Image (cartoon, rainbow, N blue to C red; front, side, top):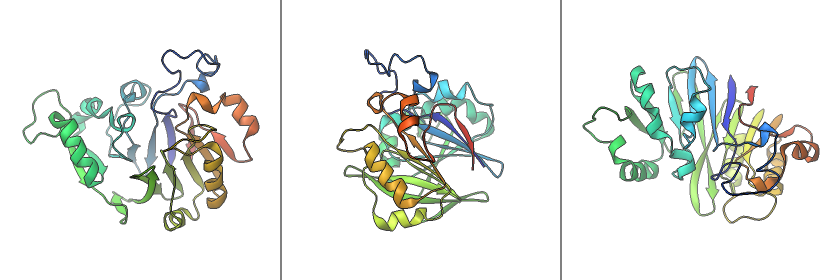
Length: 252
């Protein structure tokens, strides 16, 4: 199983438009962050978690081939804004989108032309497969466990695939959901910045969950420019906790 970080930034990306801070002007390529998403290779399948507005740019760096599934965490634009750019993959057949019923309702309203019953040329060929937080589902031989997390008052999903788990846009997680992460070797979790935010974990809050789950290794994602420089974070973080960066590929 291989995981590639396609984007590790928050909704504004880094650099943030118009910002003059040291992070946005950093020459370190690891400080250039597109909107968050990962690509997973497992058992001959290619899976994405979320499809950001930067998906076209991200996809140009990848081998072109069938995408077997896109798993969606929630409906915010930085996680669904690249759906239209799935069009080229329609040559391999419908792209399966796994999402909760609430998200399907939102997307059918906001991107109605992508989900119309009678398709016309130039729109992606998509199949929606509904999932729920309380039930595992399978993609071929791959079992996926949804993890319910709260994004302020919005219930959204993280996902566990074998010994890998991906949680983004987290503010709180109930103990019952944390138990689903027991035995995870690689945990990816969001850490927006160091100061308090209404709907996102701070770095300190993310580290507390990492300490509770005790994965073999943890990567931080969905970071804003307020988190600081990548190189500085590497020096400050505890052992086996790392800031992810765009293009990072890790074996699981």
